Image (cartoon, rainbow over all chains, first blue to last red; front, side):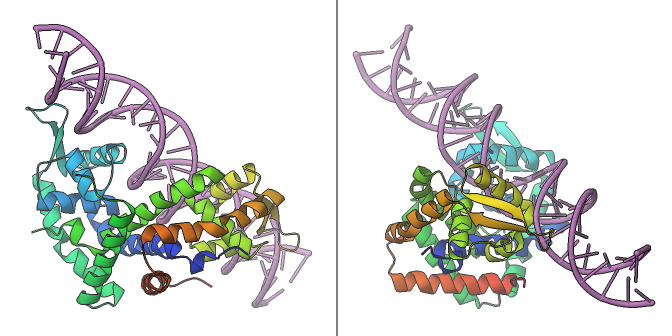
Length: 143
Length: 143
DNA sequence: GTCCTATAAATCGTAAACGATTAAATCGCA
DNA sequence: TGCGATTTAATCGTTTACGATTTATAGGAC
């Protein structure tokens, strides 16, 4: 007898990630951001001038996913992409004025999301850490 | 100051779901299945003859996602799609012989995944239930 | 029976995600 | 110095995912 998706941890994760995505949409849509773009802006807000690889390490994505996403963000006027002059293989990512302004507007978003979950801050942190540990067990971070 | 993705519950969920996806890939690839297809076969293995809507309620997907996925699974010879004779709006999904055989081969997959997580069965069940509760809080199931 | 509405699936366009490959720049070592 | 190996992004093709719309069928009010 097969096992139903509703009994699987993997499906709980999969479907909850989608639900979280959907819960963020109304918070991000007014800003013109998709969810992965929100993560990228947030990452650059904490560390500007990262290379594509460094952003990929933080978001756990590769250039095949990031390059198109970053091009869209560049087209939207939030970031610039420029070859590093000392190592032309690398592309450095910087927030524009508009991008930095946008990143500051994002400060309230996590709080608004937290409210939707109905969880205490401590529960949120605990769950985050449990998930991060599982993720790193399944797929160790690179460099 | 912006918040880094690594501090966000949403990113932990997002990235862990992707890591789980990647952890399943080597288990499913030999069978020719993608991860969402695995979920669909599993669901049909527990309840054959569902309509597209019923499967969508179980997987929390809509026909815009399911129809192409199901067509690929039909092309692979695992399922049949046929209009319900009593209500021609509905499409009933049934496993073929090959599809049922495949669904039986999937019995070991969750155990193999559980081993990769390094978690106890009780921990897996607890985490699954916590996530499912969060999901349903964010996005109540339909019908 | 006819029409209006509701429901079920399909279709279309766009964005992510990822495997596999490619192109360009740099590094390392003989 | 020169050249093969490595690193970094980019490109290409396929699959998911989802908002918005469309088509076809069924149901209900009159």
